Structures are given as C-alpha cells and as structure tokens.
Picture 1 (tube, helix red, strand yellow):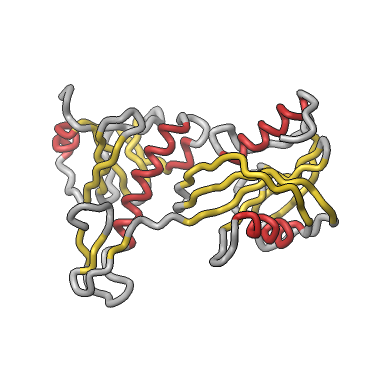
Picture 2: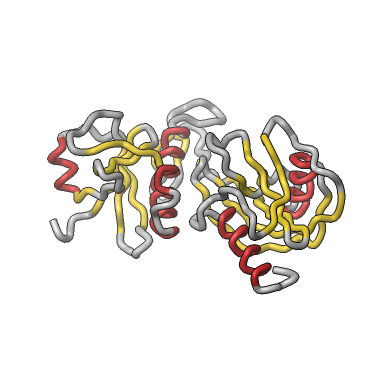
Length: 262
C-alpha cells in the first residue's frame, strides 16, 4: 500500500478522523476494506505535491473512527494542511450543489477536462464558486478595533469582514462594511495578504485601515460588541492560522517595535 493513493473521506461535510481527533488519509485498499458505498470521487493536488482523492459517502458509523468538521482543526493544522482539506471540502460541496443546471433544470455531468459540471441539455458549465471578501483591522494609534460577531458561539473578538458586492472594488467594500457594521470612517487603506476560506467558499483579502472619524455604533444584526483595544491588552482573538489572527499579530508586533505604520 506504499504507493496507493491516499483519500480524504467526507460525509455530511465532516472528515473521517481518528478517535484522537486527527484527519485520516486512507489508502485506497483501506477504504475498499470498509465496504462502504461511494457517492462521488474527485482528485486534487496535495500541498506536498502528490495526488490525493476526495471520497464522499453517506453518514455512517465506522468503528474506530469519528466525524469532525473542518472548523475543529483551525488551531491544529498548518496553513497548507488546512488549505488542502478546505479545497477537498469545497469541491464536494460544489459537486453536491450542482447536480442540476441552474438555467434549464436538466442534470449535469462532470466536464471531460476541467473541474466543472456541464449541463447535458444546454451545454453551460458550472465551475466551483469563489466569493471574494475583505477583512480589515482598523487601527488608531496603539489601539485596534475588534468585534465579537454574532456567529461566534464563544466570546472571541476578530476583525471586520464582508462580501464584495457587484460593481465594488475591495477598498469600496471595506469602507462600506466598516461604516455599516460600526459606524466609523476609515482612511489609508492598504492591502496586506489573502487567504482562501472554506466556510463556505471565500477568498479573504486582508487589509489594514486607519481610523478617520466617528463613534462606534454597532450593527446589532451582525455584531454583539465592538471595542477599541490596546495592542498589549487584547481579548481572546483568532489563532495565527487565520488571516484575522495574522493581521492582529502584525499590528501587535509593529506597536511593540514602535512602528507607526504597517
């Protein structure tokens, strides 16, 4: 089995894992030994360069294993490992969501060459969808603005983020989202880095922005609390495996080194 292709096994958007909580990569013969019906299969390139397969099955109990969602691994996987697992999850989600044509309603089939689903009737192709988003850390001297979002089940403060709308530039989205979510105007917007994010399928574009004016007025539909925090008095924040955590860490390091800008 040394040269056998390794496989992620996913059911209901959860990964097959050991009881200790590690994602399992089964060799092909090992999966066949489980005698489980396969729903779909795709191949992708592993972050180490070799091919791996993504296998979708119906939810079922497998002795000796457990099922865990990808969010469980945010603070434990390296960024390359997380991106590979995220790509696997997004490919299966895309395949499930595009069994039928969105134009005419007829069934789709796998494209002969591309990672796409093709309508057998009208010929339109459906590629995996990627939604661009901005995420920004707004700063004011030694302080940064962090928010506790409603979607977070625990009290953890993060950067502001939002989807780019049709006809907007990322910078326009950033200014709109900050104003809508916390009522502040910003300036000196600068791009830092990006990160693919599989919840459900975003490309996060990370920015810093400087506070320009206004008082915090929280949009209660999305945010529970938003506050200014000194770089050396931060609350619980996301890990450095996330772009939000990296933006915050970069700000902290800059202030510790007495840098005025990042």
